[in-house]
Length: 350
Length: 248
Image 1 (cartoon, rainbow over the protein chains, first blue to last red):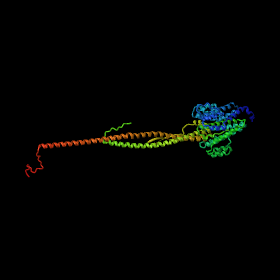
Image 2: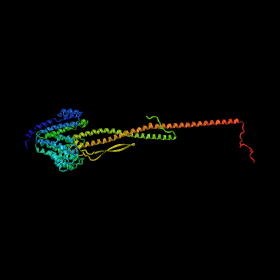
Image 3: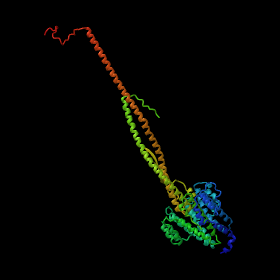
Image 4: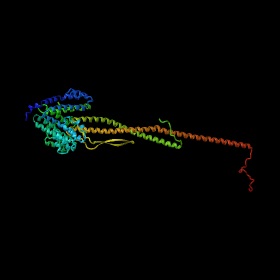
């Protein structure tokens, strides 16, 4: 193993410093409390001006809506990310690319369904997530059927490797867009996990647990959400990423689970998942199951910053920033709709 | 308003009977229409109350639905494009049926589900629970909307019908019936007058006859007196002997 630690700063030191700077201005609990006390969106804008967001809303002349705030914050995140990406070298650039693949998957699914419904590309492109842009996006709609789509277009994109698992079985058209999305995501997670493992060192120690948690979380949530639907057990088990802490035996148990109790029983095998599922059976808890998963993810991500000389920082920073955007949008929606009862349901980060 | 005129008809007993029948008919008609108007008004008030209830409920439900949308966006990210993409056929459809209230047909809308839930798998990996809640809330909102639409159309239709019926009731009460009554009283007065005329004519004729008779008696008496004592013509019956009789 190369001496990663001493050579790290040569390539990545500047960027690590940059990310730590970004991390330092993530909103704290105090900021959230202030934001939650605002009466109108104008107040919110005022409060945001005192944080790192500064005057990002300064040019808004029309009525401030929650979606405008959302768009502007995402733009800011995108600019920061692009700055990081353009300055990076291998292997950090591959790592950062891996982060963008999940957004690319979403964009591709969007474009494919748009093509199936014969919608013009120009309408769909603005709706794609900016972090997931890739060159062949405009060409997706030209493909007439799935094999052409794959051979002509996907093969050149970084997503080609993820399509291989799902395409081998059935025709792309027949597959439900959601199932396709989940299959692609599964391949993506496993590939990402492998990459981090190969990289070794601190990166592996920090990032792999986060990815394992993500894999298990997907398995649990897919199981819980598919109780009411027609998803068969085989299909379900094909969507579970295997790189998580749940071993194959447990994944099989999950696939055959019929209700919440079974899922909880599987989760009880691991102490941290047991905590998440505790008390989530009744719906009157103030945090839903998904909320608790978010909380745990935030906790894991904040741990990434305690270590130095690894790439986990970048992943954690993106995820935490996204959570922050979600929190602010939630607070803004509660204020705009005057439903202040649940305004404290955001997930504080630091 | 219409002048105080009456129907032009030749006053006769027949006309009077006809007019009486018409008056009776108009009165029955007016009563029936009044009953119809009352029934419609009652239904109208019921519908109004229900509309107020439903509208306040609607406000609540929409608010809750919008909030659950915010919750779902918080958990699942932006799924709006996925939803918009997958729209093909309507899942909730509306049927129109007819309801009859005192002769007025009111449209009634009822909703029904058709086809499966094409958004079953949306949010499979994230936010499925919130999405399910969101779907339920908006489904409830749509149901309420259909009901409200139904109520509002019946409200408008009933309003029209009530106005028309009341107009008719008033027309009968204030125009038709007085007109018939005036006609009737005119006929009656004409008939009475004619009777009086007849009576007067009769009386006059009797008088004239009496006068004539008195005059002629006076004449006879005078002539009799001028002739002097005149043998009275032979009274055949009073005669005891008759010369012409040969045999007795």
